[in-house]
Length: 350
Image (cartoon, rainbow, N blue to C red):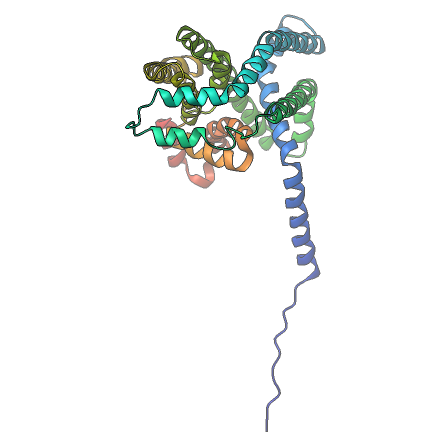
């Protein structure tokens, strides 16, 4: 007699299905809102960096709203002045670069002998379609204009969000802290105070180092008669935000432009960039940042690569202060999980 076949049934509770759907919905929303969240995070960096100035004005009996208004107008005036001085020349240099690309390529290759081992690599790079379009039209200029307009729009959003955060920031923190007990509120306040110092040091220090990089590169390249010195100096200031990797992203185009002058000029440019990189790492950065941003080079490289893959250059910029803030979070929030000895050892090594 055949026994009846047993059937195995899987029962998934309705609540579990709802939770899975909610998680998927949350991930979908997170993907859509990721650009806005990055813009908001950069606005927080800017707001935290400007708050000490606002607090100083308040200490001088200037109302907070008036302090924020004066600071905002001063920043807008500064940005407009810098843009009026630099952007027209940048556009002119970029247009000249696009028009003279074939001649630029020929001049570089003429400086390299046929036996030079670097010639094949440089030739392949210069022949790349994205660098040297076959049909010279105005498409690259329009692409550059669209990119600049998009960047300008995001900068405006960052600035507007930062102003709102400076105005309503204390109230938002108090509202958020009301959800927690007194001990947790104290931790939140302590974390905010210490992390804000990290962010302020990072943003203020990065502005100083980027400005120093811009002036140094502009002076050196102008003295060496390298084409598009202002454009290359601007790239150097932007890529200075990226430790380690930024050096290579800035020096390669500078050397290519210098090759159009002579191979010896390209070598001088390389040496000049290396000298500045050493001066910045061993003198300027320690003097500007002090000991507040003690992050190992390995951590920096891994963080930059991971953040760059996830969120591009903006993610790389925003990731460093987050990594530098980890010791504070570990000491205040994770001590009982990682252990007192681990926290003490990390503090001793930092």
